[in-house]
Amino acid sequence: MDQDNRVLTRRGARELSEQEVETVTGALKIRRTLTPCFVDSRQQLINGDQAIGECGP
Amino acid sequence: MKLIVLAQEDDNHTAPLKWALEKAGYRVACWGGLSWMGQGQASIRLGSNNSITLGQHSVDPGDVVWIRRPEPPQSNPKTLEADKKFAAQEYRSLYHSIAFLLETMPVWCINKYSASRMTIQKSVQLQIARRCGLKIPDTLMSNNPEEVKAFLRRGGRSICKGFTPHVWQKTGQTSVAITETFEITGDQLPADEVLTYAPAIYQELVPKEYDIRMVLMGNHIYSYALNNTKKALDWRQDAGFGHVSAELVPTPPEVEKGILEFARQTGVCFGSLDFGVDAKGQWWFLEINEQGQFLWLDQFNPSLKIMGKFCAFVTAPEGSTAPLEEREDLFPTLKEYEDLLSREAVPPLARPHSEDPFLSMEA
Image (cartoon, rainbow over all chains, first blue to last red; front, top):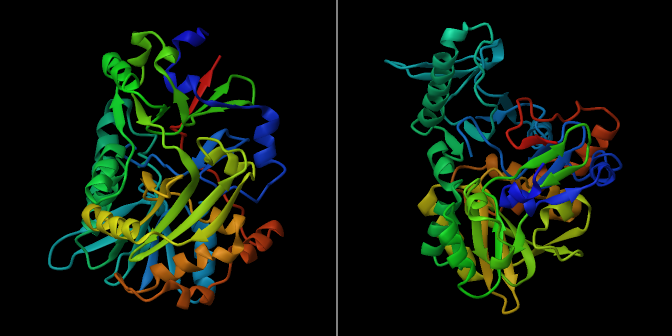
């Protein structure tokens, strides 16, 4: 993939390694799952402050 | 009176709050959103007797309706291909008819749907915040390369962020990239055409000493100073790693006045707000998420009792000015719920049920 051709926001995104994702969601199974930007390692979902409802953001 | 929550029962905020309210003797009904299946079906009856029925629950005078996070409407997958687009629009229309009609009923909506749809727009919230006397950073929202370049040339440091969060996952891997606020200079901009691939928000960088997460509950405002040991521009990922602590702090009178006016002008009575505080102690309004997460504050600092405050808020009369602290101890704590959760004595929390709009796969 041509990284120079990615949207700007992707370029500034924070990279989380597999281990980091597990740190948040595996070792801390219950704690911190309610935070504003929780990434679910099994489904790779953001479950955080924003939700796109039935008619968009 | 009962509380009707528009969210799946196993939503990570709905489940503990429902449990706490029921323990305290209140009735709570959950409706996950409009769907072709049994409990997702809904009806509006208009005539001599108006009524709304959501699954098996009727909406009755005096009810409180918390529009937390309903799932997008789901039409029947057996609908013929030729009819699917029409059916989807009809489902959407029925949902809108319900959500907006609720505002006209003798119930208390948290928040009113029209208010939430307007206020969720970042341009609207920044403009109204400014009008209410709150300090906001200079902001550009654009897909126009010339405008972006001019903004970054104006002097001072700038950040870039998206309108919505997003996760990119590499195919076959579990490592991810997550949108985050980042500093940007004119020299770092890609080719003009790339700036047209996705609009973005460009803002003056607020020289933050620390962040504030504020929770608005009617006439009550609670401000929490967030100490991020990583000192990142965006504390939200670091919160997940446990690098952030939360402490109740007083809200400056001029900020409180501005937020109460903001609530009046937008019509929202509940929300999670973010501020940055600079070295001069000035509070900069950054954003509001009207259904943002808030129970994590109790996970980080149980003495805050935000769960008890929310329970007290939704069970008090609309517009009540009585301190929520007077009733917060009527409800069990998040810690008690989590103890039960760890022993599997309450159902597990679930993940979003529908396809995630915030996820993309990449090679």
